[in-house]
Length: 526
Image (tube, rainbow, N blue to C red; front, side):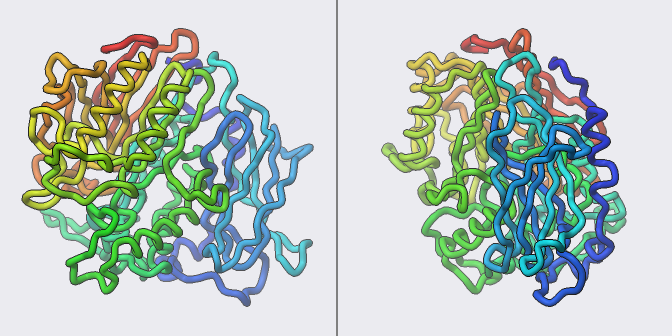
C-alpha cells in the first residue's frame, strides 16, 4: 500500500554489509554472561551491536554496550560514506549501567535516512577507539506522501524455547528485517526473567531442541546482575543484532520482564525465589530494562521514569504506548462494581484520554500489552487482563476501559485501533456496541500477534461485554508448542500516503499472510 517496496533499499543494504561482523567470543555461550573486565588489552569493543529507539522527526536514541569502561561517541551522516559527519559526545559507560548507554540525537532532518556509527573511546586515551559499529534509521516525515510501514509482535525466549543454533537462531527477525519497516513495536514480554533456559528440550516426536545457554538464564532472575543477563540473552542472536541495527524500536513491557502475572504489592509463594517481594524484583528489572532498551521516557532521558508515552510518526500516525503492569490493582475475580485503579491507574488513564483528544494524526494506534476481550486467567478464580468472562455490564478493570471507549466516542476521536500480543497466538477481533452489554462506544478493531520465540498456546475465550467478534484466529490445540511446531507470528501495518488507507496483515514466519484487514481513514465503526 505504501510507496516503498517491501525489501531494503540499496543504501540501507550497503550500509549494513560488512559492519555487523560478530566477534568470535560472542558466539561462545560460555562467555555470554561474562561481565566486562576493567583490565583488558586492546581497544573497547561493541560486540552486542547497536540499537535505535523512539525515533521522531528530528530526534532519536542510539544504544550500545561496551566490553569495558569507554566513552560513547556517535557519528551521523546523510550517506554511508560518513563524509561531513556530525559527531555526538555520549556518556561514559561503566559498571553503574552494566557498560551500556544511550545518546540522544537532536536536530536531525525530518523524513531522511540517517546513517550512524558508534565508536567506543578509551577514557584514558581519547586517541584509542574501537572498531565502529554502524546502523541506520529513517526519521519521521513531516508530510504523509511516503506512507508508513511498521511491524509488531512480542513474547521472546519464553517457556524454555531460546536461541536454537540448529535452526539458525531467531530467524523470524531476519524475515522482519527484510520487510524494511519504519519501526518495530515490541508489545511486551521482551524477555522471560522467570523462565530458565535449559541446554536441551525433548520434543513430542522425540527430536531434541537445543538452546544457547548462559549462567544468568539458568535460573529465575532475582538480582540486578541476573536481570541484566536476562536482557543480554537475546542479543546473543545475530539475527536480533542485525535487525536492531536496521529497524528502530518502540518497546513496552508486560509481566515476564519480572515474573508471570505479577502486580504491584504482590508477595510471592514460589519456592524458586529467595526474594519474595515483587516490588523489589520489579525495580531491579526496570533498571535493567532501561539499560538495555533505548526509551525516551526512562532515565537518564526522563527522571519521571514512566514507560507510557506517545510516539508521533508524522500526520499519518500516533502510537500510544501503554503500561498495563506498573499501576494495576491486584489480580482478583475482577468483578468489583467500582474500580478507580483498574489496569492502567488513574493518572495513566487521564493521560491517555488527554493525548488521544489532542492527536491530529489520521490513525491512532493504542499499543496495549494485554488484550481487551480475551479472557486471560490467573489461577482458578483470578484474572490477569481486562476481561473476566462475565458478558454483562462492565465490572472490575472493564470499568476503566469502558470509560476510555466512551471518551473516544463522545470526543469523536476517529482512527483508533488496538495492537497487542501476550496470549501466544494470532487473531483479529472486531468490537461492536450492537453485540455488547456496554453500548456507549464506537466500533473498533483489536489485532493480536506473537509469539516471536516462545511457546504457542490455545486460543482463550471471548468476553461479550464490549461485543467482540473473532474474525480470525490461528492457535495450536495444546499448550506450549515449540517454535518448531508453531511458527512465530508477527503483524504488519501499512498506511498508504495518498489515500490514508490502513492495511493490517497478520503474518507467520516463512512469508505467509494469514489474514488481511483494510481500514478506511476518518470513519467510525469499521
